Length: 68
Length: 408
Picture (tube, each protein chain N blue to C red):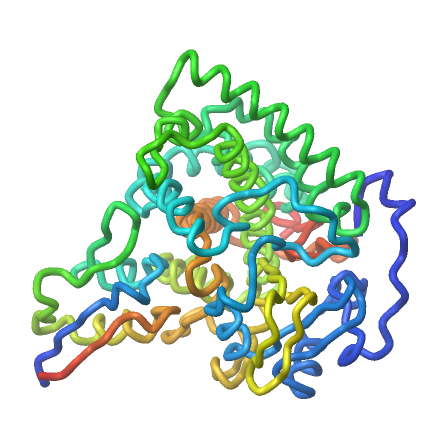
């Protein structure tokens, strides 16, 4: 499987926190509850499905998943 | 529908015969079962219009709802309820009634107390509240789940957050009924509700200034605005008004609709009892299919939405619930699929006005359903009773008679 990288677009994120609930290993929330990718956004092997799940449940379409 | 004695003198709206050109979200047919109406409206146009409410549009597709929610230039949030009248704006409730640039700083002060982590700290108390409520009726084998369970959970949770006696919740329920249901057609009821609520909170504000605590009222009094200055009393009162109006019958409705669905869908009930880990996913689906909250906007400048012209001076009924039923966005939109994997539902809104209490609502829903299913895994609607639904802006069961235990 290709290596995935995620990024949360800070202009789009409104803090629904769906990603944090679906993929807590990949996202963290700041003090306002807005989401950020953990580290540099590299998705560890085995968590690819969770990355896509978070992406497809974000109401603001704020999560980008790229294949490297 | 209303259980208030004053409801008898409300002016009646003419019965709707042409939904596409004369829709009315307070019509009893809509209140009872809005879903086929939305389907009719969506088939007619992405945006429909009614002359009622002094002129009002309704976007019917997910796309049109989204366009309006994201467009704060043409659509103002200064009025967030579609009503018969449009009196001068006096009682603001920032940030829900704020537009940019005032919106962001007003919202920033409210966000930290409502993060998922903050809700985790509140969760044990909510779990206890649910069990205290169930203790009251479980031996009876029957209850009105709306009156005895779903109604009290958000009221007590918010009272707990505000550091206010949980028993004062009955007052909250009365004000909300006056403002959100009776107030659509009766200005006097609305003003009475707002006035009483303001007086009540003003007393708590004065008290917290003398003896601050860790509660949310004290936190708001300590919070700093964008220029580093403290919030005015009026701002704090407005935000408290918002928490009460937005945080109670909404979640009460969402929990109620979830239980209503489970009472009449044994397969889903049995699956959640057997697989409690699926409950968070099911909650998202209940939020999609039975989204309780319809918001409003006021058109400030003429524009076009999904190809439809929209004129200034009209209101907009911003129906997130109808967006959530759009088959162009959700396959099998009219089916409740409790393990739906892709679910970008808009129950908490889209764009900058995303519900500030969404993490609270989700936690309350999850805990309320978990605790109910643990203790009452088998239940059904009481065939001798009647389920009734709230009218207007927030939709959920207001009477929900169910049988269980010895009557199951």
